[in-house]
Image (tube, rainbow, N blue to C red; front, side, top):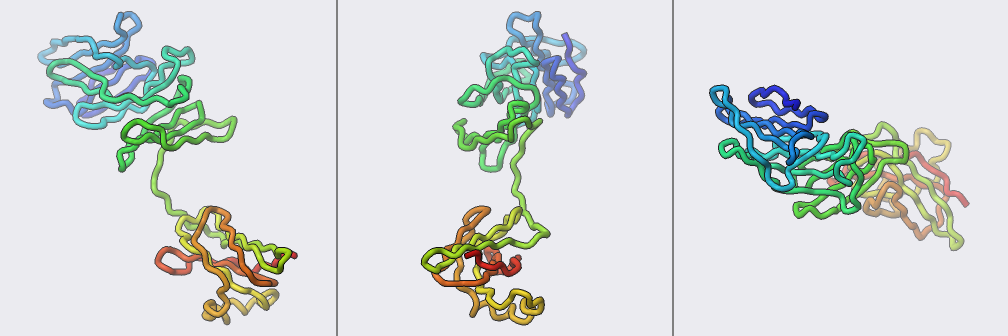
Length: 282
């Protein structure tokens, strides 16, 4: 049986040994090792505490057994969260899962606290991991399956996505991201049969756009000095203003126009970018 060496205040996870070492168990000379072993009937062995060179073992609670795990993380006092792959190419269970195991170093027992699996029963896969979000949700990356999902505190699936075919993810994480592209916003515009105009405002990668203003840019074409000279007169050229509504925000303008410009405004009302003037397509 392969059991990794216990290092105080360190959690290690040799996946193909199917073991976990508990961490932050005090005093330091007491340690807990979770270990799967194909030769054991219950598939799991606990060795703890380790005092004066004497080790003791006990059986786990129901549902604690795991196989070929990834991403073990301390998730509370004596609680370890594990991405339980359940496969090294040959499935043990028909699905991977995320489990929370509570270890009692004094009684040498372990219990399954929580378990999450995808409602579609995603097949076991190498790789994978889970992330605890600040709101109590759990984000899960399903490894070579190429899926990532978010579950609420009750274990209900509230978000599910996939990477393009032919790709996968080792792990998936969710963080607040502020995008500030070096490129300018882009505007396109088409004239409708009734003479009105449909404007499209796009700024790929920009996360701080709260509102789009549409300016009548007639007369700007071919005049490189117009922008600096007339920038202070946006109010009299503003013909529409709408809240950002996705990568391609569509803005109907009930007016005949020959050229437009879009201006990106943040939540505080500050300009953060503007497009070049764009001719309206007939």
